[in-house]
Image (cartoon, rainbow, N blue to C red):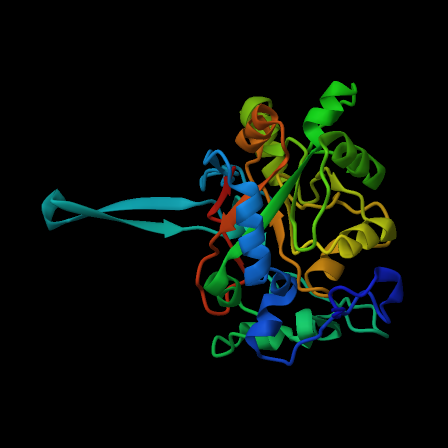
Length: 326
């Protein structure tokens, strides 16, 4: 049965605004995660869980240890109780600093007919305003909607980093290197991936590996101090939007810092479409290194995914708490 989320891209009246659910409802809060129905999840588990091998997709909470864009580093304090008979710990962190899901409150889009440079000229998914987000009495499109059911289904990995290495393509993930749609389609073909509706798409470009094994302390400090850093990522084109939409992905994620290439090289900003327009989670800085190795060892690039975002009413983003199961 065709729904607004399954209508072909070229038939959408306005592909930048697909807001099918009534305001302030759980359905609105789920956005494209509504594609992950119980039947879809059950079928994904049945087809993908075979060996029982599993791997975490969560980078350490202390990464990036030199965080950019003025964000706060993670702080972890161990607190003794009863003179050391027991201990608690206290975390202070910005989820955007390490592996995270961008929630629907994270990024807005311009109101039609405006330049969208002022706060009042922009809205979030469903038409939510900045005022509603800052109102702690409002939980509209907050992270709690994702937390209640989790982000659970069939994952697929486009291992661009491994493919590029085999094909002699060299780049830094701290550049404006673009992962092109034609390359992703070629990788899917070579990997034997046949997409299914509601798949959770992962794209590995090798950022966490470069940060952990190549970058020097000075390079990390320079990155954090740069007010306009460069990030490799997915090319921002209408063809990419069409491909994501028509494949009916429920969520997208990668190990890139901004998922799409940044600064953007064209007129499109994918965050404005995916988050504010479609209600689609964007995962960033996932640690996909062990996943890449396990996919190669198992000779398959599909798996079961279970992610439990933080149950924070009105939350903007969350660590993924994500496991891939084979």
